[in-house]
Image (cartoon, rainbow, N blue to C red; front, side, top):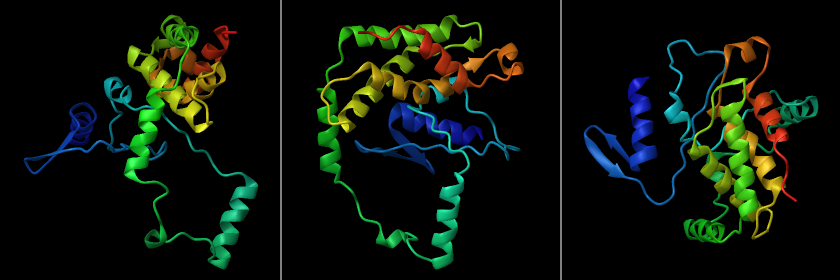
Length: 203
């Protein structure tokens, strides 16, 4: 609904939330998650492009594999390994997370890789399958996400493989495909992957 969209814009852009006329400033750390059910969408509205562009990534979850579903059934059957909310414990402190954020700022990205990111994003703007390509916000998101991913891999520098890995998740929700591409059965994920593959990987 429009009120929810306005609230999302407020917290994403102004870093504050308003409840019953009272404004609350957000802290240094907070995460915004939006879920989407691809089936039951009656009475809901698609988020506008400008709002989708503010989400760092889109992660799609399909059905579990056969083995995963059997594991789910076994856990429910034995009532074992079911996590209770009151038994959850933090995996790191706020201070540790802020420290990791500062470390991420020092992760090195070579200029050739910055150009690689820009070329991938440029591809989205010239592809005949894409009606609306990615914005410069997408380029920044790709750079930041690749730095974070490199840090998670215990490296202080970004590689082309880091960029190739995170790019589909960063781009897929930012592209609007042409009607022709959709009629031919293309998805934003498939188009994104094809555009990434068209760009020469830096040596």
